[in-house]
Length: 193
Image 1 (tube, rainbow, N blue to C red):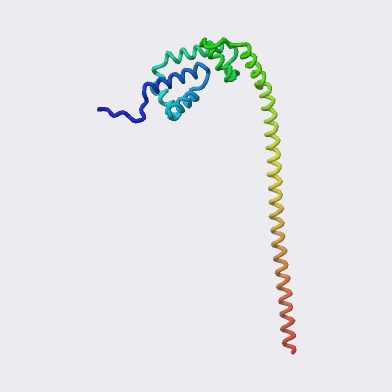
Image 2 (image 1 turned 60 degrees about the vertical axis):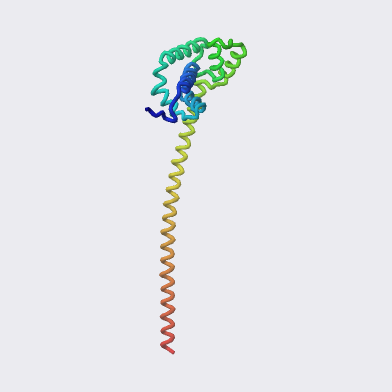
């Protein structure tokens, strides 16, 4: 008699995991986001879902994975834009269109183009990068100047403390001399009387 684990995966859970992962592959999403989605649905961790996928389920769905990758490639060709530049809403629209669920409307295209226009270009990223580099260099120079100034102030403080100690020492010796002279006079005065 074999004992079944309490948290063992059922066929339905394996099927849900496979469907969600294949959908994410088709739509250009990540497997990690698929694992998180399945984890929420099954109250399991994303890591547990990922382990189950990689250790067991994926082997059973190799042809499905290849088909999903082909569909993703076809979808990208139909749109004519790389998935990296596509907003999520457009990916979903394009995915639905490729599956025959919905035709791509002119409004969808306009929305995509407006979102695409708002995304920063590589040149803007390069300019921003250069500005940040200059800012970093400026801050590093300022930090070096402040460190140098700090060291100078520490040296000055150390010298001032040494001078202060020397002054206190001189004052103590002078006080002792005055006290000893005073004592000497008092002794002399006491002897004379």
